[in-house]
Amino acid sequence: MAKQATELRYAVRPRVIFKYFGQLCLVLAVLAMVPLVMSLIFGENDITVRYAVVVGALIALGLGMARLRAPSGMQANEGMVLVALIFLFGPLTMCYPMMSSGLSFLDALFEAISGVTTTGLSTMATLVGAPATFLFGRAWMQWYGGLGIIVFSLAFVIHPGLLAKGLAVTETETDDLVGGTRAQARQVLKIYGALTALGIIGSLSVGVGLFDAVLYTFAAVSTGSFAPHDGSLATLGWPAQAWITLLCLAGAVPLMFYYGMLKKKRRVGVEFLQVQAIVVASLVVSLAVGAAMHLSAGMPWSQVVHHAPLLAISAAGETDIMTRPPGCI
Image (cartoon, rainbow, N blue to C red; front, side):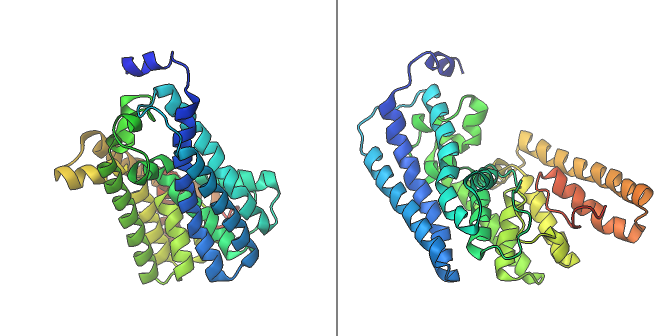
């Protein structure tokens, strides 16, 4: 920590920023290829062209900057600048494809930032008639935002070790970046991917269609709230609602807890306390929400038992996927 504080007094070196910003652009290009492929599958040609322009520009920019000669080490202030740049630039690159759905630039930017930061707020008054690629694209941004662009970069592009630690300001943040090593980043990425695959398979098994299963799973494991329908979970049956809610809870658990369980074969101290806190908070909020539903809204206990735990777990996991349309409670 003292070393990083000292580094904050040094000037930011432009070549370091440009070089590793270029590498992050290549990661963004790969991530943008996924909705590009989906637009081809859905036959939405206008959106395909827009994504192709974005991917091409990112690759050209990334290759140009990544070839710059720069010191291998990164200072703490340079890491802070780089992270800030990528979280601004990433959503900006997605505005052009999203604007094909009729959004203004500001609305598209808001939607993209909401997705990448897994906030889940939307400027869309309704999702009826929205292109399938648009729905997938914003859910996809939410999914990789839930893990973090930096972790993807550590896993595949950015050199591990001291450079990775430069992206964190504190030792805790270094741990959040899975120790700054490529092997650990890939392990956490595998856990995130496995959780996602399990979510999709489970959703299909309880009767959710493939497209909706993917989008609801993306929203749940990333602790976001971009559901593919205006009614959110209200459009699904109770088995699907229960399954997606469990995914919300699983997504709220720190990935380092899963990683520690697999690596050490035992409970992880701080992360296990966080899991306990999430469970306890869900139970307490369930009781409070249930009482409010019954006493203030007159909801029958049979419905309270159904809706209160699902809403509470969704809130505790910061997912905010609702089981009832807005205004029903």
